[in-house]
Image (cartoon, rainbow, N blue to C red; front, side):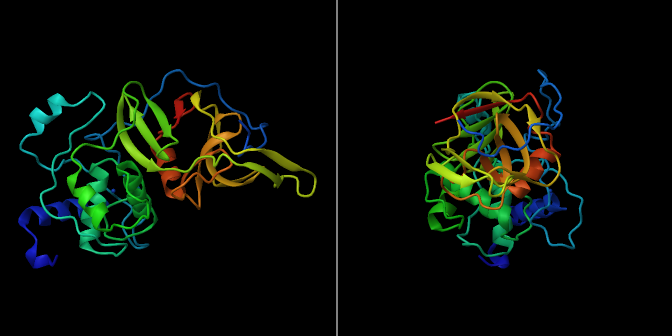
Length: 308
């Protein structure tokens, strides 16, 4: 689609995007000597603007401005009121898209900015609609594909473009009450739920279910660690964390972990594929983990519901 063929509504949509851009085993264990504050029973997240937290500018060019503004408008829909009234309480009607979603593959450009912004509005987190098809865009597309039952390639093919165009309800998990992190092991997705409503959907990778026998990275040559790579189902709580940078877990490096069951954590990783791949932890991308920390999305004491 050329610039000249876009309708004024699409041009306004792209302009909005530019504004937003200006937007079982302790498999990941580490020493427990670090002091940890008692879990808080009161969970508080940063205020939301139209259900959307301000994304970090991770995919932005290096010379981009650090300032960004929240997306404060939803795509217009004439039947929004009637549709919203018929939805379950944990689902949010976003509305139809006023144009065409182009199957860009992984190309940069204005059509990619439209896809990025639409995914943000549908709750699939990426750093900002800047038209750069970077890491967080690929992760958001992969999360959308998992959510929609499409092969999770991370590329916007014709099937993915059609599904983005068709979806009018914000991506949501199973939880319909409380403020928590929901991990769906079947779909390999992480949902940020606030007061029973999903705010964000993140691509994730959990334990692969396979036995392992590997050297202890913290004690080279001293011993091997054995176990089964499981992310345990249950309702847990974040009870400790490591705020800065990469840490050497017993089975490998982990980024800014939030521990919720013994040595099992949600943490950043360089590889978050479209299948279960971890030793038991819940992997998200490094930029997504920074986003979680920056917006206080997983404070100590918050529940983490893992289910399959």
